Length: 325
Image 1 (spheres, rainbow, N blue to C red):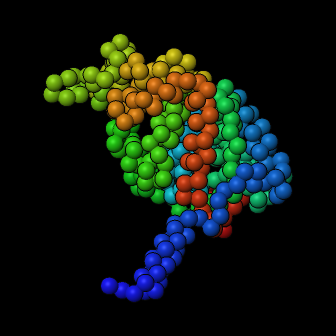
Image 2: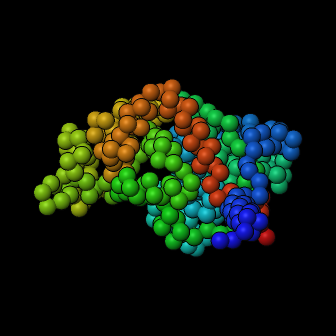
Image 3: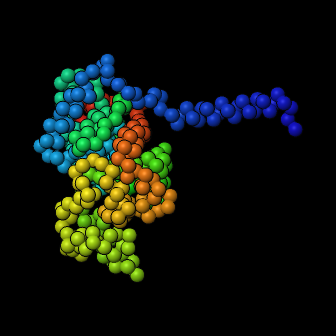
C-alpha cells in the first residue's frame, strides 16, 4: 500500500488534472448581461427598433428569427455562422432553405454599425432579434447576454447533420440537446417556440400516408387534424410551398397553447407530438400549459441556448453575410 503522503499527492494530481480538463472545456469568458452598456449603449434599442420595423413589413419573419437563433447555436455554436453566404454554407442546407429573417439581421447590423462601428457581433444581433421577435408576438422578453464573436466556418453538411429533424423522437431530441449541455426540460421548453411559425407538407407527410404496416396514418395524430392535413397535402402531389400553422389554437401568438395542442394530439411534427407521448417528457408538457411558467422558463432556456459553443476568439463582422477581409 502506498504511504499517506504518496496517496495525498496522487489525489491532488487527480484533482488538478480534472480542473485542467474543465478549464479546457469552459470558454475563456462567459457572455454577460448588459455587455454593450459602455461600448455601445444604444445597441439593444437600435436593434429592437430595426427588427420591429422589418417585422412590420413581413410578419412571418418574427417566427423565423426565433428559429434562426436555434439553427445558429446548434451548428458551430452561437457564432452567426448561419448568416454566411457562399457555396455549401449553412444557409444552403436543405434544412435551412425555409429559414426567414436574414434581411432583418442585415438591416439591424447596418443600423448598429452606423452608431457603433465594429462593436456588435452578428451572433449577438441574432440573439437580440430572437428576443425582440418574441416580444413582438406578444411573448415575454428576457435579458439577453452579449459578447459572442462571429465565426468563420459555415458548413451545409454540418447543418444537415447537427440540427434535429422533424422526424426525431424524444430519445433523439434528448440526446441532441444533451450534446450541447441542454437538459431535457430545456429541450421541451425550447420546443415551445413552435407555438408560432409554419411547417411544410414534406416535413410531416410520412405521418399521413403509409405510416406503418398496421396504420395508414400516425395513430398519435388527431384524426380530425389528419383529415384536414390530407386535404392540404395530397399524397405524392402536394405543394411544398404550402404553409401549415404549427399551432392550431392561437397561431401567430407566442403563448403556451402549443402544449395544449400536444395534449390533444395536434402536434404537427413527430418531434412535437413525441413530447407528449413519451413518459419522460409528458409531465413537462402538461406543466408548461401554465402561461406564467412557460413565459419564465422560455427566457431562461433561451439564455442557456445562447451560451452554446460561444467563440472567445473571432471577428465582429462588418457585413453579417461575409467574413471580414
